[in-house]
Image (tube, one colour):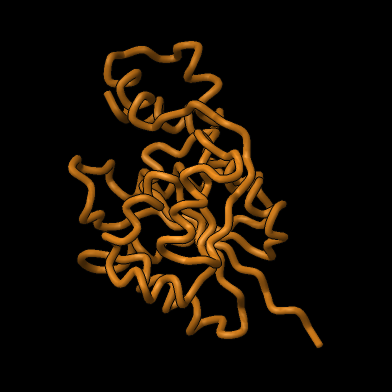
Length: 203
């Protein structure tokens, strides 16, 4: 009997995609033995207070950033979808397309603690195994474990090192003209840096 395909789902604004995003993807593939990891840039992000960089730029940068992760497939469905877009819709579509696949949804600790505000969060728990990447507090019995008990006993933790990288800080550096500052070289893949410079993004 063939083993079910293990399909990971990792969404975000990727504005811009940086080294911590790539590290999470690589650790997700390795720890959960994923056959494929769908990288899904956010479309019309209803919960974001700020305006996102236009989606064609975010999609292009995301494709550049994850090009060296063999199992990663950048999926534009949320950008292509009209109106507000929700994670549950994406999971339902993927399940319909690949009904035999086991879905794993990778989210950050901040998202985990706001998870019960997500649209149809109970349905998300039924569709996919939740995996929380809590880079700031990964010891047993920490906040992630407490969150597991409150929402889904099946939720799991992604083990990865602490990486102090912030898209907000990156945008702030670029807005102040601090390019190419030393931290930027470590935070952004070279191809993404070149793209940002070429298109004068975040200025």
